[in-house]
Every structure is written in C-alpha cells, then in structure tokens.
Amino acid sequence: MVSIPFPSFPKHEQPPPDTMPQMDFGSIERRVRALEQSLTNLRKIVQVTEENILVKNRHVATDIKTLTSDINELRRELHDLRDKMVLVIKEMQSLARQEDVKVLERYIAMWNPVKFVTQAQAEEVVEDILSRRKPKASTADQGE
Image (cartoon, rainbow, N blue to C red; front, side):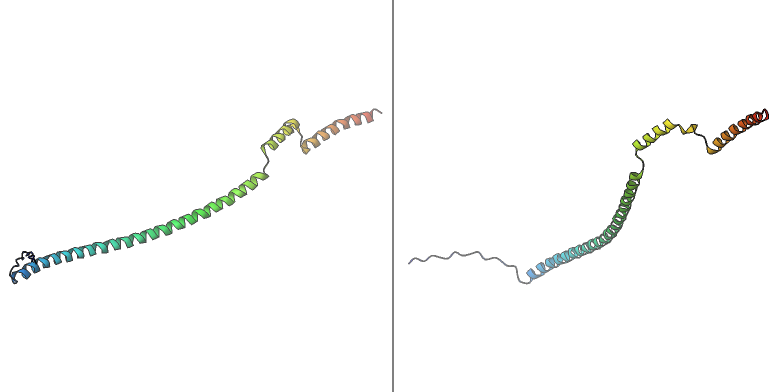
C-alpha cells in the first residue's frame, strides 16, 4: 500500500495572549460606544417623529371635524334651498302665463276703460240733464 501524506496547513501565528485582548477590547469598546450613541440619536429622532405625528394627527382630526361640520351645514342649506325652490315653483305655477296677460291686454285695449265714467260722474251727468229738462218743463207748464 501506498501511503498518501496529508497536506499540512500553515498555522496562523497568534500574537501573545496578553496584547490581543487589550487591542480588541479597546476597539470594540469604541465601536460599542459609537453604536450606542447612534442608537440614542435614532431613538431621539424616532421620539421627535412620533410626537410630530401625534400633533399632526390632532390637527388632522380637528380639520376633519371642522370639514364635517361645514359639510353638514352645506347639506342643511342645500335642503332649505330645495324647499324654497319647490315653493317658488308652486307659486309660479299659480301665476298668470304670458299668453293670459296678452289676452287681457287685448281686451283692455278693446274696451278702453279710460273712457269709462265713474258713478259720481254718471250721477252728475244725470242731474245736469234733469236740471236742464225741469226749466223746459216749467216753462211749458206756464204757457198752458
């Protein structure tokens, strides 16, 4: 049998045990402090962001309440306007149409009511006529 030699791996040289932990520990400690500082800064940023979001949510909630109130007010006003429009339409239906007014204008023009006399004027004319006849009747009575 042939024997195959196992390859030999190079061995890593390690620094003396005293110096290695001190170097790594100092470096690790600095890195941990930097990470802790970054984490603290991030927590502050998150806290400020959360506070800002809460403030914005309050403002948005107030705005939504205001808008809801305005919308309800507008709905009431719209309903009132509809009711008034219905009343106006009903009233307009009871008014005379333009054709009816034109027919009345023709009748008025034909009758010409300006030439009509009042009752007082008619009585005056009758009295005047009667007073003119009386003297004729009294002169006729005297001649007999």
